[in-house]
Length: 468
Image (cartoon, rainbow, N blue to C red; front, top):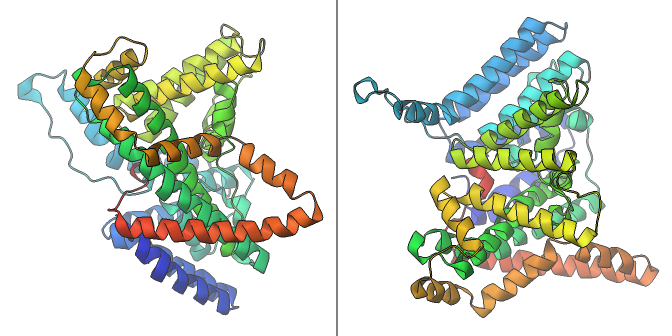
């Protein structure tokens, strides 16, 4: 685990922020952020700090090598980066899967490697830098410490968003955080923290309880409560972390791209992926889908390319068959939409939204399940083919306290564009703008206070994407 949330909020971040704010020298400020980032990561992963540093050193060398458009160096960079990710994240999965088909006498020893936190994020981020240097989209960085800051910057080191080097290259060299930036960043951070602590953690309590039930307890009510709770949990957990990272970055003078755009209001799976985990979907588009040929080589090749992308998207999330099936499920739906076997471009929009949200919910049931068998049990129960066990009904009903129901209703509203739309309309007037800024400040303080009280009272509940 990384710093406890209370330690981070009350000690670590204030010290780092104040030092960064009072020191005007850019090199010293970068040094402060680098040291803080390494300390932040080392607190939970002291051994794997070495792996992080090795990754930065190697990609610094690869960047210098590909600046002359050397394809062999680029190939080596891809092989080394993906190879490191494979060893630490997927080796155990592949060996275990292979042992299932091998004779017992020929079984291979399963590697016992713990997963370094954030390895998927910082590996993709470093690799994007090397590829962009090769393509000429980014100038090679000859200052090692600037590249180290880019890869290791603690707000988005362990769970994204995945930042491209050319998006913050100037701000690594020179940046300034105005009072408005600090206020906006702190507000964004507070909202993200509230999403995680007040909503996602509450939904996690319900989802975990349902998924922990024996299959014989899972009926219609339990299945839908568990599915909806996890649907809300993963959105508010991950978008909450992204808000926190974007907010902290802005307080230091960095402007990260948005990572979520109200994905649950999408009217198709294709639109969902334009709104969900934007930094990952654009990474796969730019560095896998387009190099494979995109949609330029005929329909059959386009379908193949998309399946490769969705296979890799699922596998990126973890070494489990559930993630692979989740990725391929989304790929199949997008293919059906493209062929218009699912007519999302025709008909009433409300039905398109219902279809998209239903498919996303079913997909996340598979994503959350420990096994495909458990996923099948949950999905069958959602459509009336589950157990008719009164114990499951009673246990599920007990989970739905007034507080949980209230939080769930807030989650339903919060995942739509309604709050943002109303705020923008209000702020169009002069009085609304002034009152709105004051109200936003007051709301941020309230959310921050409630979140800190909740954190002090609860046990450690890590972000879902820490394990990816």
